[in-house]
Every structure is written in structure tokens, then in C-alpha cells.
Length: 383
Ligand SMILES: Nc1nc2c(c(=O)[nH]1)N[C@H]1C(S)=C(S)[C@@H](COP(=O)(O)O)O[C@H]1N2
Ligand SMILES: [Mo]
Image (cartoon, rainbow, N blue to C red; front, side, top):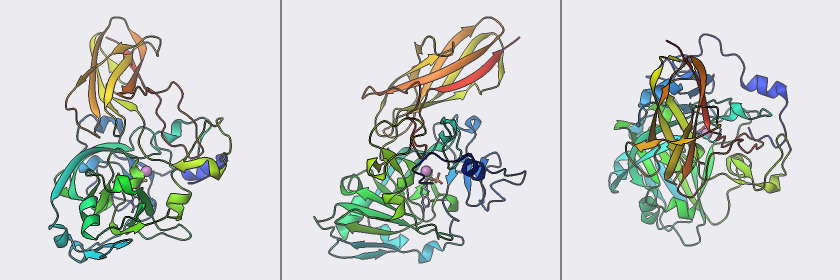
């Protein structure tokens, strides 16, 4: 997953090996998941949400994508779960779920996206899970503020980072899933230890009983099955921080190897959009055609979305509709007239308030992160 050089076709073939007809969420041990989710891997379970199921502001838990690097823990007993808070603190804690009830409750609606979403569209191809468009979803998360828990533990001024340890067990040589947050983001009032997803206890696949929610940042900060928080006075050197989830500090030629010294941790998501209707490949009758979807840019609000109905030759502003919620995707809608029978290429291109726009060609990088070209669909106009 942390390949620093251009991958071989063989490794890509292995990563996306044929899954066969039994590649369903049920076969992967994911209880309650929609059978229409697309399997990218069964063991461990990596399932993508089809675009057809992403047309609502909130993504239902049953349809939310699943990304797990290793087998999820099974048979977790919430009543016995402990969250340990240790390291550079005056008073280490071991908190049960009931203990967490002493902290004020907080909620945040967040669009969660895997850094590798869209990886399959990079040219040249990059090894790793070959996500297309649906390793993204939006949920309302409820829990307690990490800052409140750290303050209760008496986090020392010497702390510069906080590690977050997930309770999944690595297989073979895979390192334990431990991620790191800079102290500033850890103490941000919107950074949560969540126990609830869309009003339900976290489903097993999404981290029951506790997970991190780090609004606006790529999905791998949202550590599932959270069981230990540790304040440190220096950078953590585990694999998932020191090697994984790193991005070049300067532009690289597509396919080129990158020196480890020129890679830095990913943080925020980039500006992006997704057309959720009409669906690509569908046929529409001549007349008024309604295009809609969502645009997001991590913690940066969306300023505008433009639509092209002529393969990107010209662009028109879409209407931003629906709720404007920090960290969550924004609905866009656009109506146009299609008069003659033809195949149309429709594209969406978002720009955030900071002036960042989706690029015509996404910046290639060795791990295939942050693909964000304008979304492109094809529909056939026919009567
Ligand atoms: N413990 C643990 N937490 C994890 C992961 C994991 O493999 N183990 N995967 C991360 C990644 S890469 C992503 S994109 C999100 C996905 O969250 P979801 O499965 O709830 O959609 O969880 C993150 N948290
Ligand atoms: Mo991810």
C-alpha cells in the first residue's frame, strides 16, 4: 500500500483480483449491509457505495462504504470496552462507555472520504484498492470531544501529537493500525470520539463501540474500534504514519518514483464533486434534464459548481441547494434542455471558497491519493 515506486501490473492485478459472485457484504461478514455495495476486497472487507445510492445528503449506515486494512474485530463487548488515555498526560485514564457519559455530548455532520477514492482512474495505474467513485459518504456522528478527554487527563504542554490506536488485529506482517493527529487538530472542538452514527450505535464495520471523527481530513484519521489515545512529544514512527498516507511535497511526473524524504502526511481532503443523477449509462427523453449531485472540499466550503454538457468545452453555473453544513458535502442542481437524440458527456467541476478548482488532470502520486478530476458521466438522449 505504501509503494514508493511505480507499481508493476502484476501487483495491480493481485490487488483487484476477481471477486466472483459471492463477493457480497454478507460473505465478508458485514451484518446489515446493503447487498448492492461493490466489493473491492472481501478479506479484509472493502466495499464501495454505488453512485446510485449516494443521491441523499445523509448516507444511510447500511449503504456507507467500508474500508478496513485488516479483519475487523468480531464479537466486541461494548460493556467491557475501555478507552485508555496515556502518554504525556498528568493523569492517565481508562474510560468505559459509561464513563464517557460524563463529558458533554457533541455532534458533527461530516463527509468521510477515503484518500484512495478514485485511485482506479489514475494513469499510469497505482497499486492498492481500485476504488472508483463511491469510497465516500456523509453521516451525522455523535460522541464526545477528544479535547475534553485530553484535558481531563491533564494533557501536558509538551504534547505535539496524539496517536489513535484501532482495536483491529493485524495479520501476518501487517503493522498495527495506529494513526497520528497534530495536537492542534486533536484539540479542535469538532474532533470527536464518536459512538453514534446517524442516530444508531456505530455498526461493527464502522468501528463499534468508538471511533475517531476528524472533520475535513481524509478517512484514515477516522480510526475505528478506538481503544487507546496517547499524547506524545515527538512524531510517532509506526508504519501508518511514517510510511502510509503520505503525499509528495512537490509535483511528480506520472509514474515516477518519489524519495521518502519528499513525502509528507496527508491531511485535508481536496475539492471534488459527484454527479448522482442522472446515472452514467442511462437513457433520458429529450426535454428538460435535471442534473444533481454533491460537492465537497474537506473543511473548506464550496463556492460554486459548474456543469458542462458538451464534454468540458463550455461550463455553466449550477445552483447550490440544500443545507450548507461545515465539513459536509453541498447539493448542486442544474437543469438544461436536450433537444436531439445524442450521447451527452456531462461533467461537474467544483471550486471552494479558497479558489481551489478541480483540475482537468489530477496530480498523479505514488499511492494514488486524492484523485479529484471533474466528475464525468455519459447519458443517451433518445425518445
Ligand atoms: N482501526 C481501523 N480504523 C480505520 C481503518 C482501518 O483499517 N482500521 N481504515 C481507515 C480508512 S483508510 C478509512 S477511509 C475509514 C473508513 O471508514 P468506514 O469503513 O467507516 O467507511 O476508516 C479508517 N479507520
Ligand atoms: Mo481510506
